[in-house]
Image 1 (cartoon, helix red, strand yellow):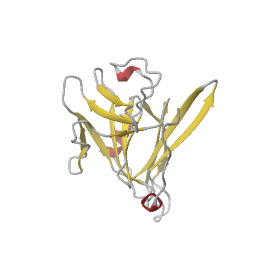
Image 2 (spheres, helix red, strand yellow; image 1 turned 30 degrees about the horizontal axis):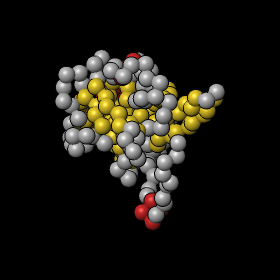
Image 3 (cartoon, one colour; image 1 turned 90 degrees about the vertical axis):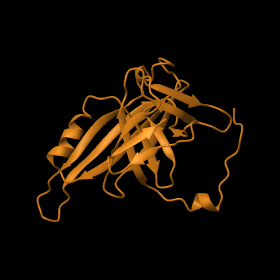
Image 4 (cartoon, rainbow, N blue to C red; image 1 turned 90 degrees about the horizontal axis):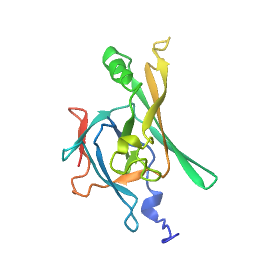
Length: 197
């Protein structure tokens, strides 16, 4: 049921595109996630490790103006599927970066995408059609590696790097991360980590 309208004001027209930060983590057995469907809310209010008060994420930096989140919804037989694609470019191929990318091949991930307007969108988590309310790693809406494309280039002016594409097939729009603790998302760029509560 539609319960509110949507207002567009001057500040909405001044927003910019793009992504500022991408935080990724692998699902772990016992992860605790809390969703909020309070009036005018579509949030995740808690993401923590099993038995802990926080969860640690890895910060993936990328070349400016290459990161992009796309959302494509299709409805069939009364069920809507949202394919959320996250793409970003990592410049300069080297062993350290290749090692980290290699670990993505067979892992089930979730992401917090921080937009240029400071919205924190959670991708890879879905409450709707959840296989388990208490074990989010069983919900099968996780973020997966879809492709890597790039190379060293041939000419000195060619781009050297890889474009990473991740995809989550979930059953609702991405939710906003809004920690009930008020702590929010704590990002440490020097250690390339982030923390949620």
